[in-house]
Length: 244
Length: 244
DNA sequence: ATGCGTCCGTGACCCCAAGTCAAGACACAG
DNA sequence: CTGTGTCTTGACTTGGGGTCACGGACGCAT
Image (cartoon, rainbow over all chains, first blue to last red; front, side, top):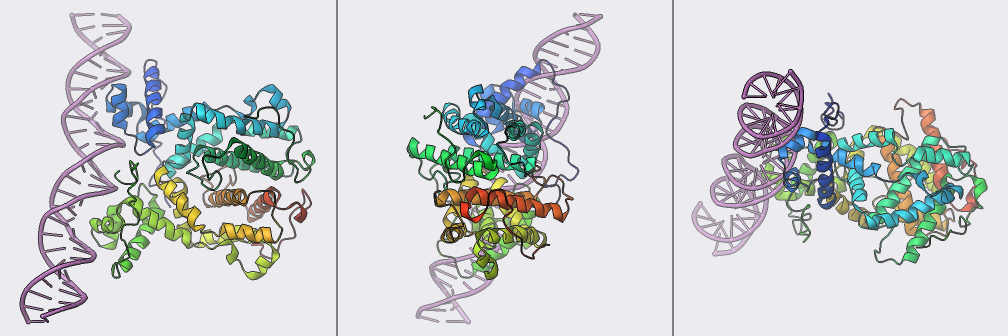
């Protein structure tokens, strides 16, 4: 199994230009902007670098000058999209005050809304997770680990300090599990298609969806929550007023 | 990419041949066999249909005759690989007798071994999950839902009947969560690269790995297990004798 | 054996999108 | 205006997915 694909010598392919030249910065931004649209709309493979160039009114070669390859371009697009997401601890302070799991609930409900307002970055994120190539995915995972764009690590620390999370698990394990579960839940919200098991019927009433969120929170709470914070089997707490 | 991508009118592209022609069945099998090797070794994109043909000593066109497209070929490869995996309830009867979570533990430990013996189908499964294209992934998800190749649904029923699983969750929810978690755990075992959060150091001692499995089981048990089966916070049970 | 129809493999060929590069345009300094 | 370095261009190359008209092999009936 060479490197994943055949790059055992690993020419890093991404990050090309050493230090951003002043002028080109604006252009790079424009390209990324337009590319984002195209990737989101058509998916990774069906998006054409040529089309992006045409849409921008520039030459295709120019894009390669800036980003080296389609992969490299997508990687930039991906990073920007993911960085645009809020971090867990960006929740309003009253929500934070209510504790770890209230913050989670807040974002679960919120994501549902954010999705409707601006699905594009979410779709980009989805593409990065499933729709490109293992080689790129590896690069993406490196990025996610090193940047922790959702602030999961500090969020988990927050939960640990508040004694709302189990002390008997490695913190890495908690972080991984939280990331997995949230990612999947988000995916399921985004495309019922992609995981028909969870939100099988699209036309589901808001009620039902909220019940799912509730259940999901319960699962997480039991899985990684401290035993003290919840009598087993009970629903976490009365919810706040963010009903819909 | 005709078919697969850009098929909003959805000409189903896969399943070509109406009813398997008698003679060609053997050849199809040979192609799938060789293709499996190539995909596993190089990844989806880097695998060349031409190479596969050369390796088989047949014409490239022949492969397209049989499978319609590279995607179609991979889909067959994927299905075969996934179908080759054991189902949960294929565990030895004494393990089954020990209950739902013992079956889980059995497979967690087992997978680790199976991986070493024959990593190819696991890698194919990984490619199907992450390394192709959203369009194909959608098809794959359809397949997974309709075939339930790991037998998750009946396994969960088994757990419910034995009263080892929570009654207050939708069964779909339990199935989804179990699938998610197990898939991820398997991925993490397969490629530390792909998810450095969990098995960060590759050279980890078997001890440590077993501890992780233990923790992971605990998480699952708390998440979806019935409250009765476990005092909160305790380790699930003494393990059997399958230590290494 | 001969002829006919069907199936299937073939490989030369097409298409198209990623990626390259030599030459020109442009900015700016002196 | 000229020289120098940087950015842009678009024609070109590469290469892999996908097609198709042909012919050979085989089954089968007469």
